[in-house]
Image (cartoon, rainbow, N blue to C red):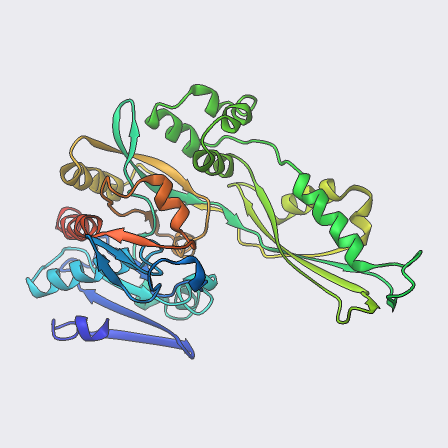
Length: 401
């Protein structure tokens, strides 16, 4: 990456606060210090793979019939690479923006950005400060009765990851009768959390999405949307449910040390994604409600990483609409919620407008796009790479000149 960018007259800044967690920043300085800047930000890390689930080498980067296969092809190295190519092209062509154009290839996003975006904003704020940021994901083509719609991720749910600890009394595994087994209590608690259903809530972003996509109006009614969601195809059902509910997914359990010892300790890690406006205290109350009479058995640690959002009445939104409309004829933007987490949340909290966007071809269907995040056989077509590269180049000219 750095070898590709070097030689374009760019000064590259490197930040490595932790071994193996290196971020790279490049800038084309603006001519007007009062003009708002734009940052193109992509992460460089990927999640692990299970090779047995892949039909191609997950780290081979094979190009087959116009499709690039490999881990990160969708999340989000396709955008990181297209941003880099566009940025270098702009630098080589002598592009002179009014506001500063930045390119940030950031580490550690898949591990919550601790040594990446979060660290940079806490320790190198002057270097990475900007008024506008674009990162993943958005930009996949969605059909509606009104034509092609391109979702822009304008808000994302809070990641209030929770550690739930249960205590018991140790004993010999050969005599389990009337013992205080921490694992059994944790299993019952997990079952109750799994059955718990937080109420549906409808925010402005979801209403705008339903209207823009010309979906059934019942999907914007918290009293009716659950019934509609249950009748949708599985991909849309999961997404729409996550956009309108706080979700709780117990994903890790640890307990016991030996098969013949009754465990006195059990720990459960729960991925809780909270809707905008919901706090750690709100989540605590939901868990208490779910656990009922077992609440007194629990110790909780909740990460306070609440939802963030950006408005859509901004110059950046208008510029994206103009540029994407030219590149994808007949399309229109719709605001959407990112149900996962991105580094946008750190920049929003620092005062920037942060959107998730790209531009993908009609070959990459939404259902495939969604299923390949952290999944098997991740891949992206060359046309999508071309469209995204053209998007960044055109956006820089439209927004910064």
